[in-house]
Image 1 (cartoon, rainbow, N blue to C red):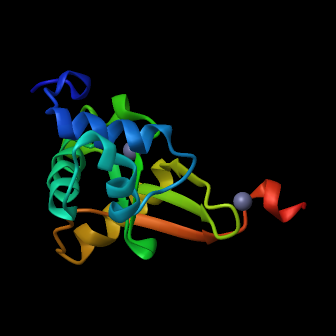
Image 2: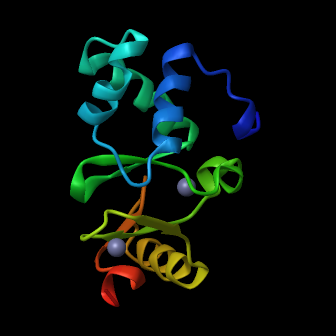
Length: 138
Ligand SMILES: [Zn+2]
Ligand SMILES: [Zn+2]
């Protein structure tokens, strides 16, 4: 098994990953494309191809409910790959800030349910949408 941080990234993958790392919140593929036009990106497909690999490597996550992407907040803990359990995201609908966390109790409950129901999970993501602490007090 190779460690997560030593993946050989192509130039495009590096550019896409850096764009997401710099961002304050999640970015759509089209926003990424717009930011990288100066770096030679021309078509959404180039962004999607890079994102696909970064998703594979666990360096980036897709937020299904808002169709956007974020850099992983703790890439090293994903280096154990498929044993990584559930990932949860709290998405602020006001400022767009995303907090990534995982919780062993929820992970265990989900595993228990899937075992009991003979369901084979390929991926579990929880997305909580709402208002973050700083927006809630504003
Ligand atoms: Zn992550
Ligand atoms: Zn907020």
